[in-house]
Image (cartoon, rainbow, N blue to C red; front, top):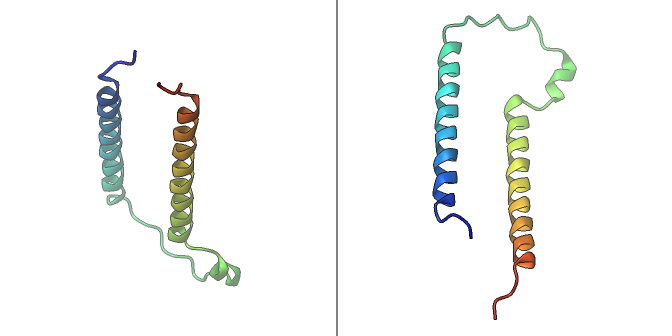
Length: 88
């Protein structure tokens, strides 16, 4: 029989991890403010204007990751339903 506290324990552990991660990320971002940025290049090569921006690449990758996670959850839900004995 599964532990009745598993979901709470897993959620608490996940929340603690995400909180710690967020703190580290915030510290990193604050440390960037102390760095000086290099000057921009004198001119951007013509081919570079056809490349996607960092923001576009990030958005596309996270959109894919969200779709992947949803598909994986749907699969696991179906797998669990198929592998759970029917109750009479």
